[in-house]
Amino acid sequence: MMRTVMEVNNVTKIYSAGKKKGGSDLLVLSNVSFSIEQGEFVSVIGPSGCGKSTLLKLISGLIPKTSGYVNISPSPNNIERNDIGFVFQDAVLLPWYTALENASFPFEIMFGKKVAKERRSEIERLFAIAGLTGFEDAYPHELSGGMKQRVSIVRALSYDPQVLLMDEPFGAIDAITRESLNNVLLDIWSKTGKTIIFVTHDIAEAIYLSDRVIVMGRNPGRIIETIHIPLDRPRNDDTKLSNEFYGLAKKAKSLLELRDEA
Amino acid sequence: MKRNWRVYLLSIGILILIIGSWKFYIIKYDISDYMLPSPEKVLFKFIEILLDGTLLRHSFATSMAIILGFGIGSGLGFFGGNLLTKSRSVEKTIMPYVFILQSTPKVAFIPLLVIWFGLGFASKLILVVLSAFFPVMLNTLMSFKSIDPSYFELMNILKATKRQIVFKVKVPLSMPMIFAGLKVGMVQSVIGAIVSEWVSGQSGLGYLLVFGSTQFSSDLLMAGIFATTFLGLFFYGIIAVVENKVLFWHRTKQIVLEA
Image (cartoon, each protein chain N blue to C red):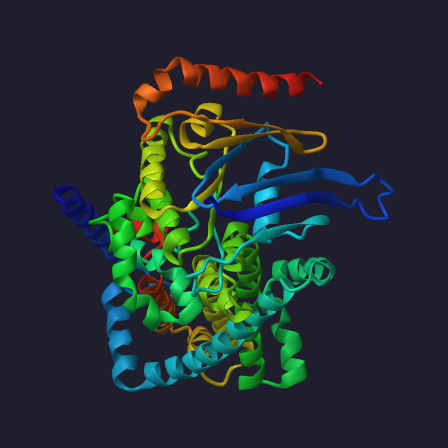
């Protein structure tokens, strides 16, 4: 039934100190392995310096792996040349483009401006799901931080990538906006059926969003444990008040603290 | 809106006050014409040289040097700044010299340029090129370096070509700082052109000023000063207008426009 979309196998990253400094090499990530099913929402949490952002960059190919490999099974109907969508901590929008032009920027890069314009309706459909309808022609400086981040999520989804990688996308956003963005993201996820890997340092956020939470530790960066989140969907504010939620949060917290003392 | 109106009125009031006290001072202390001509004499002189073609001829000579020199200098500056970002070690090797040359007042080169290239258009042109080159090059270099690396990561994710990275992201994102460099370069170019005409010119507004000085013709000198002001404003204005069009999206630009 479930189709494995992505397989991360023994991925290791070593930053070599170089000969001249004579220092030792830095092991950033050690033998990280996991696989992800089609449509799964997986979060990665861990203290700063555990290499969780590095992990996303290794998966996306932004930085080269020292060893190990990542397999992404190609989507049957993916006509684009890219299997990965990436959402950064900042929205990284082009300030001279409107929200809609920004969201269709991947089309502009892949097929040129003309195609980008022709595919407006696809973007508009995603805008509707992300609650951006009416903001199509707004420029980034006219949008709030949360709205900008929604545009960048739509941009990452525009070309229908197999996997959506999100690197602390709401880290720079205030707590109240962040909660509503979490719900927008869940909405987008359920309507598009995307497979998502979400990096955060917020335990509650990770549990609220995910099917699985991968807990990482540092020195060296590695996976400590994977927690399954059996909470019912759709989730809402009541989810966060349930005993089950507390139990999961406590477990994740103890795993993180345990490793921090070491 | 009401407050703006008052500010304008006050501005004009100050101008009237200055011209008024200028005129008053001349009458009260019986100042001779060659020390300080009266405002209306300066105005008449300005109109006179405007009508007889003197002003246009000299402005044209200065403008040619500015347009050509600024064009070459800023173009070279843009490519120079671009080249330096290609390699960290090249940048580190060359930057100290760039900073030293940047701090040297370019007009200090004029006498030497006269020896090398003669008392003509060439030495004036080279000075303007130098004046425009350094600010544009430095700002181009700085702006490329200050771009958030996430933009390049985004382009890598989208598998963009090198060309696309440069023209769709790198150059447009660095435009605000490049325009700041162009404005500084333009101010320097106008100064460079006029000062080099003091020494090497046979025509141009700088030449006109020196000529006025040898004739003790203060009204011509002051009219000439106003002419250089208008020329400087004109060229600076062209850049500001283009910047406004190109950088409609730039935040600080809007603040300036609102103020």
